[in-house]
Image (cartoon, rainbow, N blue to C red; front, side, top):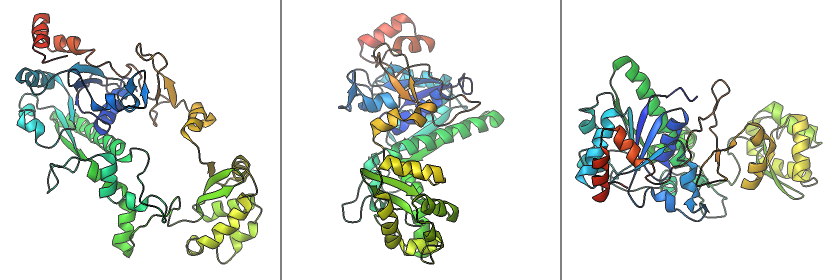
Length: 396
């Protein structure tokens, strides 16, 4: 993996989660990522505390490895000139400012492609680049509400709930990453870059594809069903002696395995339950029958029975259990990464491998502005010019 994007330079003008996740992925595949931050304060996520790891917001640390930090004030004319000079030599620029913000500074796609026709310019926004909400700010939970995700998340007798993980932010970062890769691939044939656009709203609507298909095809409006998946059964949690387990039987063979594991093989032939559609229609009755069996054993005992029978089942793990999990660690998902300012730092690896290799872990999340001087000198500035820019507080 380290050599796949080796030689690709990414100018990263993002902050928070979505944009930084996109550029971290590019760095993980070997690109050199120059993260431009406000001098003195940097990415807002640095200060999203608690929780913190040696004083740095853990959300920042999760999505900013394999980057160099360059402190530049984009509001200063000299700062904008630095960005133009860096963009002239970059392969990719990714930003997450509001639509029109960089354009007003002379740093839009049309401005920069004039000096670098091969530049892949990726814009990440909240609601997209057209329509009545184009200038509105947006964050992960707000977009979950806007796109209907919260309307189908949570239990029916409780208020709507946000999905706990940042699915909108990280999903948008992943879509942006995919678009950048596609544009770089096209550039190999044409020599030209292009503009990639992704938005939090579009990601949320896309995640709702199945529910929208339910509505468009059958007029069905989704509702909150807790941990139940509405179109399959059993596909939900069941109480045990010491908690609960999640059982997911998506076809007839798996349902038969579940019934055998719980000592009720006859249920697989019962006319109320012998097809998925019947099981969905008779879910409450089936749930009660299965839970009468799961509630006799502990969660671990239930999982063991299910695995022995070839039925999909899991305990409902907390984060600390995931961290210690044998399978997670067998796959090497938690990896140490040397960081002088974070002596015990570990990071979560990529969920994909190529030729048995995962992320190229070269650099820890950077100290704010640590690489400013080296990057500017590499862009052609003299040390005297760098000193003058620092004295004028253009860089940090």
